[in-house]
Length: 90
Image (tube, rainbow, N blue to C red):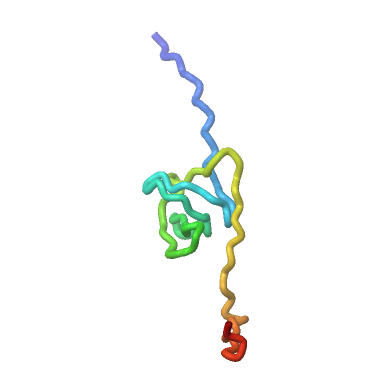
C-alpha cells in the first residue's frame, strides 16, 4: 500500500524587527528596543535606557499589533558633547 504524502505547511516567515522597534523577549518577558542582530544574537536595550542584553532571534516577538518605533539616540564620538558652562548654572 502506497503512503500518502501530506502537503507540507508553508513555513512561517521569521519575524525581523526594524532598528528602534519595541519588541518583547519571550525568554525573559522584558520589553526592549531592537538595536541590531550580529553573530546570531539579537541586541535589545531597555526603552528607558540602560544596559543592553542579548537573546536569540527565535525569542523576539513584536510588541502589540502595530510596530512601535522609538527614536534611538546613539552617541557619536566624532561630535563630543560640550561641557556645561558653569556660569549658566541655575
